Length: 423
Image 1 (cartoon, helix red, strand yellow):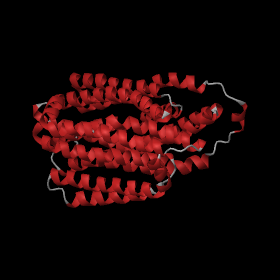
Image 2 (image 1 turned 90 degrees about the vertical axis):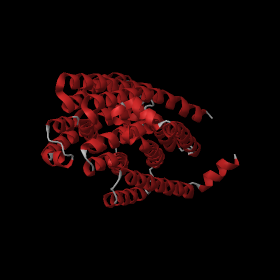
Image 3 (image 1 turned 90 degrees about the horizontal axis):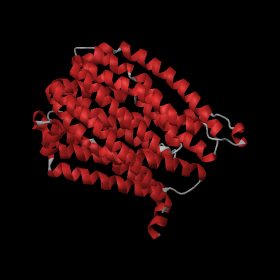
Image 4 (image 1 turned 120 degrees about the horizontal axis):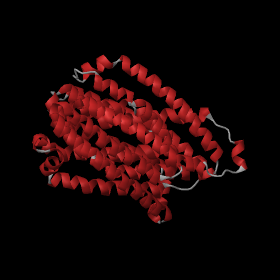
């Protein structure tokens, strides 16, 4: 039971930080929605969705960094950990600069797709990439070393700064551009502050066996590709509704739906700490040869329990929840909250299973995921007459994907499951 206690305690640390950070995030969304109005708020959320999808590689980089950092820490190879950090930081910086240059070329097509007349907020959003990519290397190493408190403090501070700077710049009169500039400045400050706890981990005394460590770039690259694909699929699946609603519906409807969608995502933010802790712990157990099926089972169980508690609130008080968070101006689509919440619950389960498969380096799930997302996109493009139809497609396809991933797990782990049930 020690590993379960560790899972719960570490998840608790990240959960508290995530809740505080999510509170700041929702304050930013609520105040931005009230100050900007539905139409401009629709632009703001569309840019956030674009940032998340285009910076998907940053999540992959953090996952890869966390994976190999956890293995090196488990082995006590801190000299190798220093080398890994420096290499990842260098290549990540180069990649971010290239991505910024390419993205700036497509500013005009992006503005046309999202029906945004002013290209300035788009350019500011793109410039965010540089430190967004660099900071994930720092956090990946810290999470790999199971320094969850330091990671939590860093992310919470970032969200607080986004709130304060973003709202201040909106009130001054910079509108959507001010909101996006506040996000850029917040990440820059958080990056430099995250270096402080990282130095303590990298200064840890090393033993002689680390000197013989070979930095296997080919092995890391082989792991990075499926992580990048998985992260891309997860990010697209989470933000596809916001993007397609902004594309197919008018700006006001997109803003109203964004309020419902962001409210529903509280379920994901509340349960995601479990995924973070599970990934680091399963990765460490994988390298030491320990069993990890119990850890996976309890992670799924905790996710389901947490998600159902929040979803029940959405079912019972949908209009009150939206009214409290966004105000009277945004409540017209409140009947969708419970349905979008169910979609996010199913997505949270897909997220935890995808991260588990990555931790054990089993990449077959990518075929299921890719096919399901393709079917989902086709169905929505052919049937987007109403928001209700769109959300039902999300629920059906995401639920089907979860069932596929769960059945695959049962097949490959049937012997361990029998042992677990007997115990």
